[in-house]
Length: 259
Image (tube, rainbow, N blue to C red; front, side, top):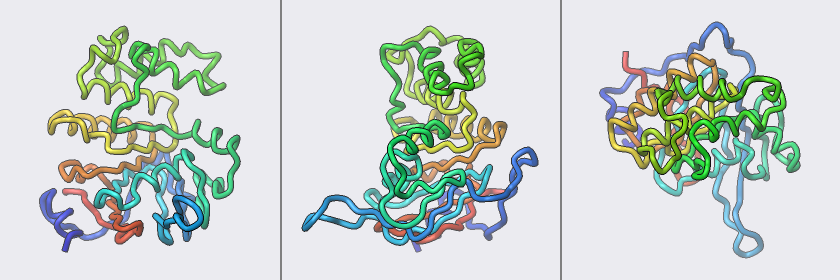
């Protein structure tokens, strides 16, 4: 079976276990709760359903990987959870807030509580690494009275780029650009980080370094990570793997920890 093959690719299959989180971030309500979620593209005769009756809970502090074939709906679901598109049908609660039917203002407020890491890093090419990270802080009123320059530098140091604060993206390697993207996503200490294929453009070592860094910093901050990937080499960082196919969640409890 394909599900067994996915987990076997990281060493061997394992029994499902409960997820434990840091005591500083106790398990309570799910940070992401999805019930009977359906989504459609197009309208009229061209309307096509792309997500079918999605049900999922993600707990505080979990690192969850979502995998499955291309075109299965993974990125669509991720963008709905991140408030990057409007949920149409069902229930989608992020940090306790129902966002199905939310207006633009509510979605904008939600997006400020989430860190995003994209496949292509999406750095501003005309800004230095420090300025790219600082820009994330400028979106949060609570940080405006802080020394955001030093906070940005400290975050870059934590991802191993303390000597690259004045570099522009064109002068960085692919792995270094993704490190800047991680710093930008985590500098405001969001409760949720959503990552879409963060290793797709990286070689094996750089990809591994990037996801291990994400794992380390997320555990330190107590935030939840939902990561979409086709890269079977990184599945072992997850507390749990969910598998999606043809717009449906086929399995939400594949455990991939190697003990």
